[in-house]
Image: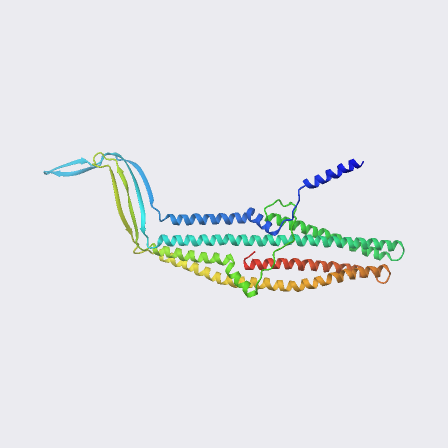
Length: 427
């Protein structure tokens, strides 16, 4: 018998050692998963890649351009020229009726009055804006994940409180029925206890549904199966250090939304400069090889080189296009200035919410012990016949409210600190 017991213990130990250990997921790990798998981030990365290609396209305008062309032409008769020799008019063929031609020409822009350089600067600014837009998308997603993360933790705590409420009222209902069976109390107390327990069970079902919904939202943000189990670490980032003014200044320096607008404004200005430069002299150097099939021609293939200058002395549309781009830049500047004010307000609101929650949290911590003691005293008094059952139910409801207030204050504090970090741009 001892041998069998030892074998069973050994097998049990091996199974425990080999069983997978489920680690609670941290907020940082949740962020990493969301950034890797979320579709919004993938879309933002694709936009950044597109801007990189646009920059390379703009830079490619400085490089030589090679054009190769060929073709074949067939006339109904051979082209001929008329000549007057010694008073006699005669004609002779200058080309054959059917002929092929081909050419390879290289063209290099040597002076564009800044048109290409401004295009490149505009593309660089657009890329910078797109990169910052990706940062904005990541920041927004991290805040969404943080809110869902807090939502799961809050719902889990609410379920624990609801379970304790049901457990407490179940014990109360048993005590009441025992007293009724002893003929000490009236049936009215039994009915009141049963109703209170039923209401608590209804609330328990409700908060469990809220927990399931919170887990579903969390899994969706991380692009997981909606029914996957969720186990979270309750450790969360601390509140950023600094005064309100310091945090506001940091937000105006670090928030990517402002950098997005700055990049877009500069890109529009550079595009306007490029449009203006297109009306100034544009100089190209070109050269290459041309072949024209013609047996009447001494040299069918010729090498060539040349220089060309184009100058738009009058253009009825470019000036308006440039003005339109500058007006768009001005509009974005106004949006930028308005966003500065909004961000300062966000920081201040998050700061004030934290200060308010600190006071709530301090009060909630004090009332927990008082509410628990009040329930204990009320229960003892009721069992001794010194008070009515309604006082016990009221004490239990006060205990429930106190624990709910503490949970909400704790997670409001955690969420407020995360929102302040988001407002500052360091989430």
